[in-house]
Every structure is written in structure tokens, then in C-alpha cells.
Image (cartoon, rainbow, N blue to C red):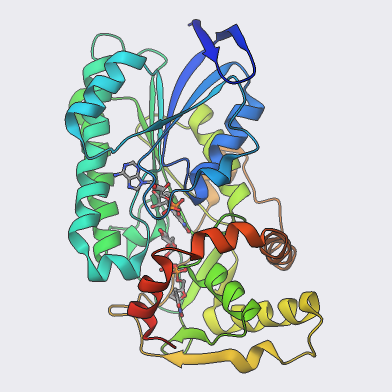
Length: 368
Ligand code: NAD
Ligand code: DAU
């Protein structure tokens, strides 16, 4: 399939041949920005459209190095707007979708669950419906990729791993909304034959992560000599994966994953929150030239998150054996790279922590 795409940006007007037209939703956010960068640079013959509503979590600064490429286009829009989404699909005739637009923060889902139901459930259903309507006469070569999370499987005890067969048991409004959207994706596969593929990934870390999440929030607080808030006793376990490795996995699954299947993505990298933060403190002391032990003094135990899942741990065997993916980076190296990125991108951090960030922070952490 070949499409002609005329680009008409500030620098040039040109006609290029495009093999595929891919809609990537939420690509101004953390993971989406890494995914779309990988796609526009690795596949110059794919036209990639970034559909994003630019909520507090969306930031076009994440994409300033690729925004002038002829195979990249930004579309500002809301996936919860049914008519808009329907018209967009009819107008652009996408033949692939990679869906990452989301309300992503568990703490915010506890204070405003309905926002999560709207975006994560209704928004996903709108995209599925528009894809079904556009592709109904010819599904050949089409693909709808839904990006999901390990949180849909619930909470593990000290032993065991989430596999693709683990029953769903979401426990926060965020994970319940993601689980619901996953069910709709499977329903569209079984009922309408929509060519879907899915993945459920563990916690990501890396550049451009919004500082409401544990790692970037702690980096920002350590830098500014502010307390590091650790929920409960810091004994909860998360399984961390470098965001660029997640993007590589999405590339692999989008192109080679079997239709109707889901793939768990993770790198066997479990950390209790307190051990992770202690490692981060050591790295920050070194990078900031502070005496060892300085940052650890900022650790402050605060009221636990309601319904706080104890442990997530992914078994990524299927993705490894079927599609040959494996993570590329060890955690200590990845965390150091991440710290370097935040220290080198002070302006980015300043921009995202101005405006409403402080209001959110004060509400969540009570002016600590
Ligand atoms: P994010 O919060 O950083 O980015 C979400 C993006 O979606 C933002 O750019 C935002 O502007 C956009 N968006 C929100 N509502 C929208 C709407 N109504 N219409 C259009 N755009 C909208 O999220 P993220 O961490 O990059 O997560 C992306 C995907 O990866 C999600 O599906 C999430 O469940 C999944 N995931 C995330 C992690 C993680 O650790 N962050 C791990 C596993 C899976
Ligand atoms: O597992 C994948 C999920 O990981 C994604 O689906 C979510 O979108 C993403 O936000 C992330 O969810 P978590 O709740 O695990 O991430 P968060 O960074 O918010 O918290 C990580 C752990 O740190 C968790 O146990 C809660 C704890 N925590 C978090 C914050 C923000 C603290 O102790 N203090 C904090 O201030």
C-alpha cells in the first residue's frame, strides 16, 4: 500500500512516498514521545500522526528534535470526542493505530476516577469504533495496537509473576479503567475481527517522565533539597524497565505480534521503593558533588496510597521466545542516564513544574 503525502512546513514543500499512515495517540506524553521518535526515525516511509489533547501530561517540548521531520505531524484533539475521532479516521485513512493516550497516574485516579473512565475507557472505545468503521470492508494490512499495563493483573505477594494468562484483578480506578479498555479491545477482535494486538508493560523510567511519578519526582526534590515522600514503609515492589526498551518492544510487537494476542513486557528488575530511592540518592550525591548520605536524609515516610498494590513482577518469556525481544540496559546504568538527562534538561523540568504542578503537589503532599 502506498500513500502520497505532501508536507508543507516552515522549511520546505515536498512530496514523499509513504508506505503506511500510523496514528499514535498520546505521543506528547512520556512513553508515546519515545515511541513516535523511534518510528519516525527508523521508518522514514511511515507517516506518523501524533494525536494528543496536551493535558498537563502532554508536552510538545518532548518532541522538539523530530517535529520538523516530513513524516511527522501533530494533531491536537481529544480521544473522548466521538464525532471528532470518527471524522479524523475518515479524513486521514489511517492504516495503523498505536494507542497510548491515557490518564496515567494512580494517585490522580483516586481523587478523580471519572476522568480516568472518560479518557481510558470511552476514549479507547471511540478509537476502536472509528477503526472498525474505516476498516470494515478490508482489514488486510491494518493493525490496532493497544498499549496497556501490568497493573490490570492486580497485586502479587512475595512470590510469582504476571503471565499473559494471569486473571485480571485491577484494584485502583486507574487499573480498573485500563482493564476495561483491554476488555473492549479483545471484544472488538472477537466480535468484529478488528486486527488488534496488545501489550502489558511494567513500570517505565527514563527521560521526559512527568515529575508526579516516583523517580522523576524524587530527582526533582533531591535537586531542590526537598523531602522525598515515600508511601507507607517503602516496601512495595515495582519492576522497572527503561522507556526506550518499552518503545523497542512496541515496535517489535506492532510489526510481528500475532493478532488477538497480548505480550507482557518487562525486564526482571524488581526493586522495593526504599531500595530504589537509596540507590537514586547515592547517584544524585555523586552527580551533584554532595557528600555521600546527604540526599538520603531527605527520605520522608508519608501516609500510604489507598489500596496500594504490594508487588508487580512481569514474566516476559512469551515476548522473548516468540519475538526475540530483550531489554538492552541494566538498571544502575539506566538510572544514571536518567539522572543525567534531568540534570542536563533543567529548562524542561522548570517548564513542567511551573503552572498547575505546585497546586497538585500541595494537594497530594500537603505542602511538605
Ligand atoms: P502520560 O501520562 O505520560 O501521557 C499520556 C498522554 O496522553 C499525554 O500526552 C496526554 O496529553 C495524552 N492524553 C490524555 N488524555 C487525552 C485525551 N483525552 N485525548 C488525547 N490525548 C490525551 O502516560 P504514559 O506514562 O506515557 O503512558 C502511556 C501508555 O503506557 C498508557 O497506556 C499507560 O497505561 C501505559 N503504561 C505506562 C507505564 C508507565 O510506567 N508510565 C507502564 C506501563 C504501561
Ligand atoms: O506498572 C505500570 C504502571 O506504573 C503504569 O501503568 C502507570 O501509568 C504508572 O504511573 C506506574 O504506576 P505506579 O503507581 O507503580 O507508579 P508511581 O511512580 O506513581 O509509583 C511507584 C511506586 O512508588 C508505588 O509503589 C507508589 C510509590 N510512590 C509514588 C509516589 C508518586 C511513593 O512512595 N511516593 C510517591 O510520591
